[in-house]
Length: 260
Image 1: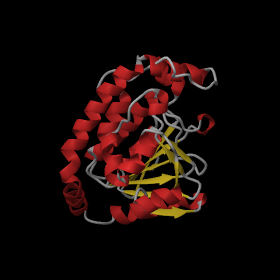
Image 2: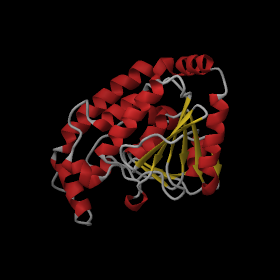
Image 3: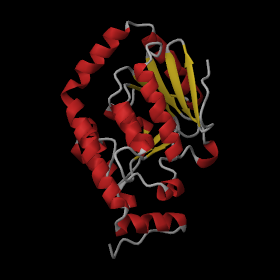
Image 4: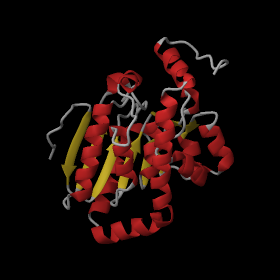
């Protein structure tokens, strides 16, 4: 069944124990607004507590997963408190006890990339490209990526991804263990749904306990790092480097950080 969606940019569908969140803002490259984060955070909370939902799927379009934050909306409604929708969404997926499956095609930028760190299975189109350009915006990483990316990639590759903000391909992501499989873009969403249904057919208590045990060593560290990053991120939003980066983006010019 399709639930009643508060906004059309996030489609919510529940069927056979699987809740699917589809980012549906193709005209804006699936960039995410505060209103979209709020809907996703509420949906994740619902999925967590609804016994009929056994698995969560997050997907975008075959040409793009998400360009990250909508910059204009981001500047109008900066996330300056722990209860900001983006931080609620981060905490929700990072502490979600049931399996999360993602289908990723095309660019996955910023939060579009870091949210994947909290997914259990990730299936990528061969057109997927992952990037975390926070430093390039005068900001710091979020979603515990400053902890999880070095753990996953090793420090040298994490430095390229987070300090240089350099993108990496689906092939590189697979080789690093960031994703599970590469498929043609038109097959990614279907494969994610297929795997999610397999999970939904298994005993939920066993899935939850297995995931808890696998993540136990990192759980408190992830929560602490998300909170620490959020404080730094909120502070840096008002500093000169971020102001220059966002102004340059809106003016469609290259930022000049020589004086900041």
